[in-house]
Length: 460
Image 1: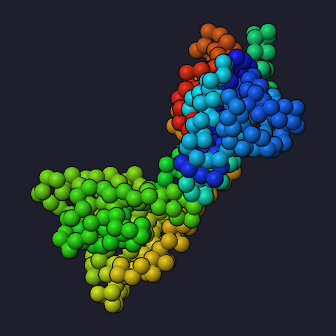
Image 2: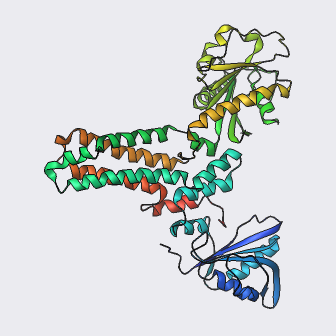
Image 3: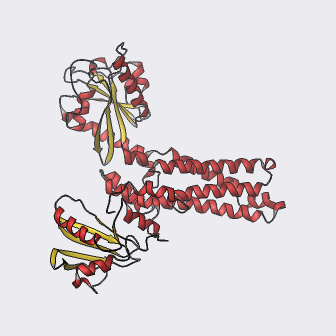
């Protein structure tokens, strides 16, 4: 399947910042040959064993290195691969790379080209390649876990299972073409209608689950409330730094201020919003509008209320709360020592929780973080197997695939309207299978490859 039979690529696979060790990777037909020219002692050394060598060019020692070779097809790319462990200075890495590039048939690798070759040589599917990219860029522990599951094939296996079911149905439909007078009976024996409906339901469930993309991009937590309720102070306490401007002047925050957090391994985008109130100020009004938008789009909500006003929360603010995804924080408890929580705001599992916090004491938040962790885990609980859609291209493809199944079901339910029921059903099932196969790269995806692999770093 490889289209890279002639070119050998080379790139630094580690950071180009000074370090104890830097790795240069080669892949292609000349990978082993050019390494042996620079390191004669490397000739005839064992495959997949690390060897100590001197790299020599024009009678000059370039560096003293450790080298390992992986002969095709037993390598990451499926081609001959060599990894050279140099001393990690910029000077050494640049010099060795330049010398390697001086050989005929050796070229610098593009972004993600090693992984692209691995895909084209059948070493991984597209979802596994994307999982690898996510693993490289993971910033939190949950991102790491999810990326490993996807790299291990959790998502690709799900799509392949769907495609196998579709192809099984297609086989029955095509078999009915040989017996046009019995096509409905043959399809009924295959339980085609029930199986298509089940697939549509599975597609709908996958589309509705947003946890995959959230885990890559960050779960959003919006902090809302009236002006001067303590939202910006809370933001600074949660982030542990001066993220937002804090002032006694009401309406200081005019726009949504974002900060990134790691809560129990979940990536979080914290949003400090403008205080919500009636205003004639055009700029502040735009800020209020954005606050409502943030509240509507957020995965979780923190409503900050001055404890002195706990019995008189604005109805418009209460309307923003999402059942099971909201916490009311009664702030300024250091000023208002006695806080009587009204019965109407008592905690309800299906509504929201109310907590008393002292925003002058960061230890007061010790009880807030566990509650946020619980809520984040609840958002993520149905997808712990890692088999969820992590990119918009996945979602869009499944939506299109579902459309073909919906068409097929409509034809089946109204066969009299179709000139050739089996032919039309077969085409819808083929189109559905092709769209699912596009996600993993089982079908023609040449236009997608540059898009997918351009997100990788050079050297991977």
